[in-house]
Length: 489
Image (cartoon, rainbow, N blue to C red):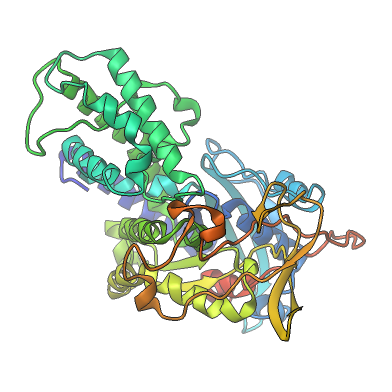
């Protein structure tokens, strides 16, 4: 971050807290696991399934400490941070199992503490505390703003808005922008209109037709209790990057509110939550990008690179804690693997690895371990073979969400169907070559798209078990082994 006196003081405070946490962990081992991802990637479902599987005793053959019986019990405990909302695990579990609906998306930070009683490989009984921190991925994309002036952010934001497909939904904002004089007197109504139109543009970029991912400032799309505050009432202006605003001008007003956003929203998140994480999983909905088109895939690549650049990666040791906290394991997960036949899962992993490859290399050089996985925390489909003429097609069977459309058919949310999702491409060079590599929703109607992955309801489960039904999954055990397996040896 910028080297000012205040930032140096903040660095010292974070380092002192990191050293204190490190010392406390010597007596009471604790892992703070950050769970994030961009909108609709499945963060809430992932945490719910993880906690349910650990506390109930799920089928996790690759999660060594559970498959060998060394985990005696996992139980929920009161969370340590009284000022942070508790993750509503019980409510989300009921939504999944009883209502067969997906829980609502993450719009704020929340935490949950899980205490794991286990036996070490040498026979000694131990306890590991797992603090799960759930936060929107859009907040991560705000962290680079701490190093950016208002003028640079404005220039980058406007440049993005001029590119297709963003340009197609930015018309109203661009029209209003053309009426603004940055050097003119500050005007509250002009600012409110600009902020509203800019927020609408960001929201439209996120719909399934375009599925853009790189959309800071993140709180504009999920303002919470800051809705309507001056700190969330600004927009980019067409400005010189190195200029200075006249006193009392619209430019000065926008810059002041941008700086307030960093101080009120971004810096506290970095200081109080992000800087304290030990391990991190980043969930990505790559299939929505395939639905939308190559522009969405490239935008997801830029967003994931931006996310990885935010992490202070490297080995977490006593010496490193003296200077700054570090995350030493990062897992990128392509969610909704159950929307594909298993024969395409390795391709989905290869595509995700390509999306994060360059940024991941920088992290690994710094000492962090980075991996990718294709997973489904709650498997909504099962596999089958469907006869089509002389061919037997590898298909998936599930209940599409009400309103989903395929081949002109609108699904009612109750009928189970078998569908052939198609194969993901194997030639990554062709896939990432440019805007014409494949056709998506952003280029036309769904009938002409090369990929169309339906959304499915959670599965119908057997509730006769007194401990509740097991949640079917794909590679949740491999995910747990990577994230905390070494802490349970």
